[in-house]
Length: 454
Length: 90
Image 1 (spheres, helix red, strand yellow):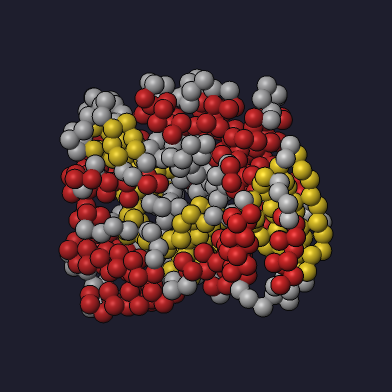
Image 2 (cartoon, one colour; image 1 turned 90 degrees about the horizontal axis):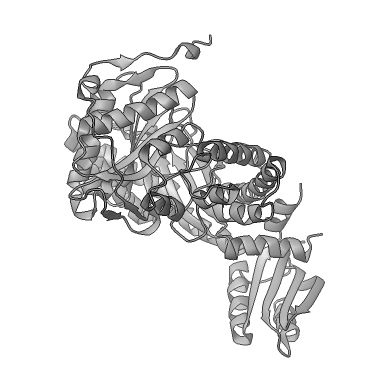
């Protein structure tokens, strides 16, 4: 039988160490909404989302209350809109009407984000893909709850440099379209390599075409819990350190598994995966950077950071895998700058640079995430940064992503404010040398030799 | 049987157990196990209870116990047992 020590350990994690389930994300396939008439398509999309997801928020709240565990976000991911809208949308403006429909549906069902205003173009772009990508700045400027992503590369296909070039321009255009809010639109736009079909985390969530009609994916969190647990092994060897991370990740993931199972049962929708990620928030003590510092770094960004992060990421997976029946999504440590107080502090102290963050993305689950850069940064430089990050993903057979925010009107030394979970970020300097001739080459970078496994 | 864990944490005072137990009895919640300690005036109690005879919505009980706790000056939580089972048992 459960004892008092175990009960108080769990409740301490919830009350004092920010243990929560970060998101229940309901994946909804929109493939059956496809229609060549734009008005009919919009109606079908609205009706399907508001029917399938009508009980999502209330069910989440019920589970939260009964188990006493906060479920921070209830969200929806959908089939990439470039596919759904291909038959009806003849221009970027047509796609914007879908964005508005999605935003309306999000408000109706009460979710805070819908992800999947996306295109998958790792090898080539259809006209529809290109129209969707070109519609992103307007779509993100005129909606509140839409998240957009573009997959521009994969280990199997290489990197579509035409899409990389276009995405650099669209990131810049999105920044300009939302300049009044410190270019907030860019916080909802992710460029991916090897994007997973079942990611529950925003802004990169979408429901891949390999998925079922509807599915529940859950993202857990708990950087604060790991940090607290590691205090107990200060000064001890790597074996003790790794064991402690694994045990803690196991416990955190078990809560996610429980919530996912309950949500699936109550909504009558199958359970997909648990995403094992350590996702920080701007709240004090909810920081991945602070875990790395607890491991022994004076500040995140110091020599040793990449090794410590590699260790952390691997142990989180090892501990979490046994706790869940299905694991997927991004699964690992997230290192967003603006959403992690420890990262912000490290940048302000000069300990953490864009280049070090790039190195860190080689060993953790995502990429250059929520990084504010000077608004004057050129589109080609942004494309160059995207290409570098995509190359890391392609060669290392992992997901990488770029979520850069060129904050219009601000420069190094200023701070961008995004509010809420998105936090705030100091503007980081970008290498001043150009890469225009490289980015302007047409075509794609071929897939690496080790991708030919057949 | 539907088991839940009731925890009570806070400054010790007269009648905490009595008030919590009366509430549970009024709502047909059966107590299966109680453990309780007081460390430096701080009251810490855990009960394992069975809510299978409960007539009202479980969410309502969670809220009412929370309110009862506020009245006494302690923190009362009522959670389904599975969250602890899942985390601490293979």
